[in-house]
Length: 277
Image (spheres, rainbow, N blue to C red):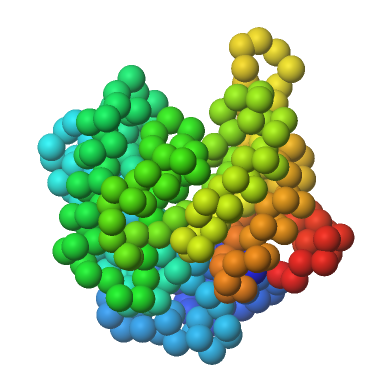
């Protein structure tokens, strides 16, 4: 697999960006430009990524294409299509969004998020995005989340079958599927189940960690890789069975020091189990 992570500072210059990726010991990175970039800028980053053997893991399309607000929904759909087009241009592993939310918070909980109607709305939305852009070498994917589909291997598999588009892929963030103490303490089982059911479709993964606080009610906190209970041995072992170019991207950290800490932990575990990064 290819490890990547957050980069900090002004990295709009392609060579400076590539040096930052390689200096961190990474072989993958999130696309540093979006749909607002000009054709020449996009091309320059593509060329530099190829030159330095950096895999573009994802292009983010973060927005709410199932919003109850029509204006927000249409803007999110347009944004997702533009970002998917960029992902196709740069040859990214995927363009990723979350499914969204039926509430005002684009990435938040809502009573209707797990309804049959919401499931169908997600299916229709993803089909529209893929059908309009018609990608040939990248995939559109939905990040797993705790309070909207897909929230498990089974719901992701159901979406994969319902959407029925060859360029719909899988984006795995195992931490986002840990929403109870039962899954928290058995997250290795959850990870193995996910890979068993969806492994060939996985295009990209996120790396972070999670810690259960010992107080009522249940409180689960996202933490730097190595400070929590995510079963990284199982995660890395299963990931190593896939395409060797599959990226694992460390995310949601506050500074370069935290990113270096998380990367060092992941490399340590990988070394212990004999997995190459």
